[in-house]
Image (cartoon, one colour):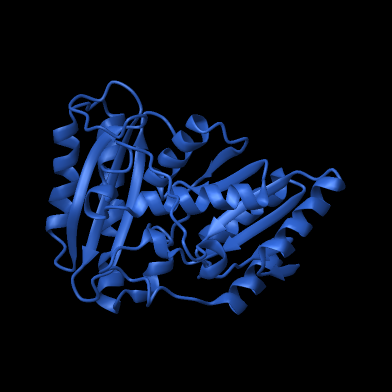
Length: 285
């Protein structure tokens, strides 16, 4: 496996893959790899001839009060994990290469970027869409792999690819969870012991609502109340939002008539760690 940093290096490597007839799979990440990321690499290994994993803590998707400075950076360990999973190239560019002096161009996927997480993180999805499109243009993969945990991100990027005629297929892979249901996340390392013990309630709420949906409940307010009732019983977890929205438009649903996304965001009380999770009712991403 190669670790590459410069744009010229990754361009030469991917040109070599294409010259040898290999399809390229891209796994975009911010590093601090966990088993969820590794599962994406393994999916890419099965589906494509050459696997590129990008590691870039993207400043454009962090707000001024968010955790950019303390976001975990573990490149050496990440490379070991990526190589073991079957990655061919880790591409870890500098911020200077990705956003050189006088950089002014950003991608906005309007409407989809202002709901759910976008409501409290203005500019976040503009940063996500911009950096992902840059990686698509740099690496030129045939397929890109994303985890279902970041459902709004997936929906935004799918819309971007369609609207801008980007020749990349987006493949969504299942959320990987700890044995107690907590969705794997690089931010889980920030949880205090008490918060870590409490955090599985996030998944329990989603699963309880899904079970009620499977029994025939279609009233969105009823399903949302079930989630919120469980969360209110957990003192170390504070709900930021829990919403049921259309999987196409991300607009709130009153009565669920088609595939809907039940998405939640919570913040822990001691460390202030923000955790997101979701489940799709009546369909898939």
